[in-house]
Image (cartoon, rainbow, N blue to C red; front, side):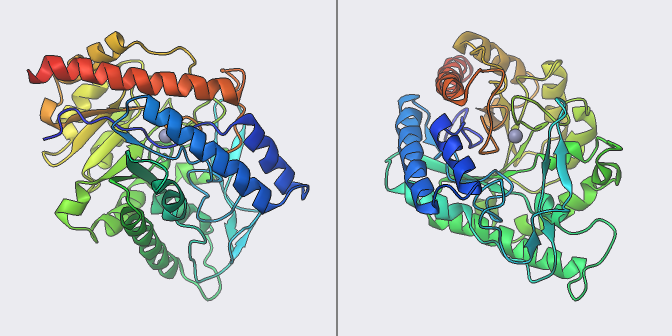
Length: 377
Ligand SMILES: [Zn+2]
């Protein structure tokens, strides 16, 4: 029995040199082959430093992904290598962040819809480079549902046909990750909280879409056995990009009952940056089901201050008053850089943010071990 499991969400800041090369690729000044070599270096460095944190499960830091959401669709955030049936402009704003910047999705122009890259394509390149257990994050189909126009039907490709293709692809993405050697898979669901934001600048957030997101994701989970489901988690957060968030002002009380209605075995929840954490622990205790493990976020990737193992331990002990300790785990609040191009402004540089990320992960591992000793002996 694995008491108090701990795992990362997935991403790490890309080194400054890699980010500079991504920019060159988008400008046509550098080849994909050169970019892949730089990615190889970043993955190697990520694995070695991840191993050194003592984390029982690691990732490749998503160093090859354009972002947590767009990896199936394009090689870079700038749109290099965009998949078929997608246009680079005119898509929906996936998110508008608190600091004013936004991230946009491509626009679907017709069917059929298929992933160009699966998360396993990255995992299989990293798997042989480490002996550690590896996890893989994949994007929720509910995020990619936003590729379809909000109000109109595409000629010859109905919304329902698109959803059917999307569910097939999302299932395949998860199965391929396990086949490539993932011990666990987590599904990034950052659009859940944003769906409750009702931001007039971002039309889809005011459409009451949360339930349709939950239903769509459950269509994928329904394809897995109970044993497989125990190895699949869902991650929720208020967004994380350029050290800013998109939906931190949405009350968790509005999200959590729906979140735990998703038929996943684990939930990775942003919590360290939440103001009233104890209230959220209580809500998690009330709404999570007996088959669901709640991984509380104990480090904040957007703040360069490194949480101490002792304060992390205290949080876990507090959470255990509300969430049964047998169903409790820890994680980071979010990936450390869900988007490949991220200056990490509050940290001063992506390279410094990488140093901080590994320190935070090491602290999470130590703090979790302290709490494990208190709770299980
Ligand atoms: Zn996140």
